[in-house]
Image 1 (spheres, rainbow, N blue to C red):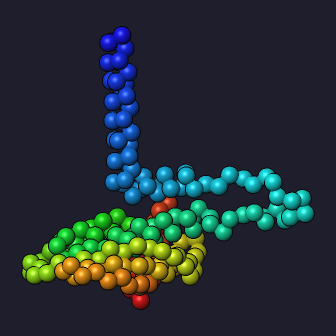
Image 2: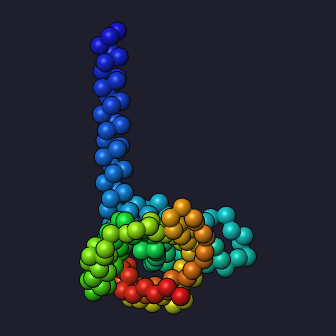
Image 3: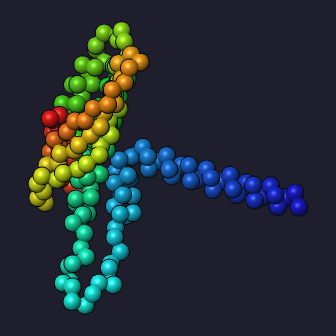
Length: 185
């Protein structure tokens, strides 16, 4: 009886450990996140449409490219727009994973500037949530998106909430969409 319990407990611990390894590897890799997002957001075919409806009546406007564009826009915006004067540009480092090489270099210059700034006297931080995505234009190789955000800005101990829009230009690099420019409006 005791050996069975030890065997089942060991098996349970191994399965939990494998699940944690998988979860951690997916959460730390934007490329794996994109792959999981594409797999989980594939809509099944609709077969119950009325016989007089056109064949494309139930097609979603969210093509795989559009889904990927929104995914990258959301993740880039929330990382790019969140940060503090005490994190040394960590938010920009996280945002670089979604940027083209040229825009990544631009973000690298901003990171260097944030790290060389004098130590802060008072805490200043921003948490950004992407709320609404408006794809202005989309081709097979480029897209422009306006992301409406809500930002909680904390100075010292006082927090205020504001809304801002971020205009993002994306280009397709291989199979992935990457941010080539971003401007707060």
